[in-house]
Image 1: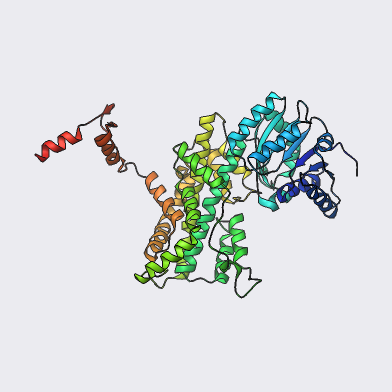
Image 2: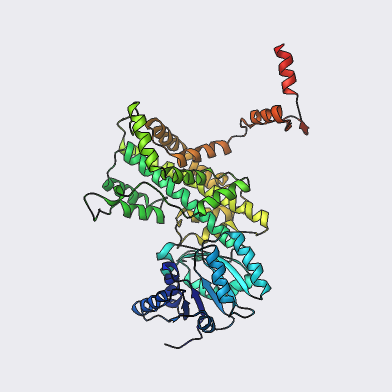
Length: 486
């Protein structure tokens, strides 16, 4: 194998870093790798030999690592967000020269990327913040990539990214230059927020089918396998199908039933909800998925609460009604799809609002395209989202795209039946319920917000507008009310 200079370097060799390095090497780009704990370097080089004698060159010190890469150098970092990124930049930049480029491939807060890009520019270095989605498998065989920051830096590495990204037959590689500043990180953050919503909605579908429909794991696997052949075809439905089929290797029955019902989280979902609040964009499906994770964490409290309410006549399920399984399965499928449309609509609206605020000029249709493969939320219906934005780039919401609007209308009866059944059975479906409430709020020309604004004017003189004439108005509600009382 030819010795360096290599085409690119990668620092940070946890599983994602190793897999991405092997992917890059497999696509024909010799790569230098470095990790602070040097055993990881040797492990990666060893894997490269085993997985096809790939052109991966390991280095135990940062100086020889940086010097092994051809100029202008491009180095990807895959280290933990926050302080470790700053530390790695400090270590590497000591040996970098003007025109070299650093790419952060972690889940970083977008403002940190913007701060670093400015600091790097002062040293004459280029910087990209690149969202990488697809987990360990995606990193190894083709992720969805969301690079943002210096366009010049993107151009230096575009040839590699186009080959390393997931390839979708009808729409090309799942990578595009996202935009300036921290836009790549922001888009990846919202992608993760949508992912939270998707996972919660699937969990609710499972709960209704299992708790009310009394479906076994075998039946659930069959149902999800069928769903994965139609409009719900997606990575998350596919892996859910797999999960239902896996037996427990440490005891009887299925593994999914032994998994503790506490969901962990890394923070990107929380950031998404915080950003939605900052931008005054309603994202209730994503927010409800976050709340559900918080509540799942209160396992001990919930076990005690169940005892309290059981003594008051509340079982786990409130009504033990007999349901038509086939009808329920079909209704839940429709409710899941309609709710999913609302979740993606909220995510896209959030990205658009931020793009407007920051002047990023993000193209929503292009984001849907690069999410069609490689990433965790990849799904057949992203193609439809892309087409909706192609038809109308200024689409106010996915809900009013003619095709999606028709689909929601066709499914709303089933959606309402599922939510009502869940409520009457005492099964919480926060994602499906709030998605339905979001839809019902958005589709109504008049809301009870007039009363809330009247209350605000009553106690705080916040004024109000009128439906029948322009201008701001204030009424002495308290005085008038008192006069009529006397």
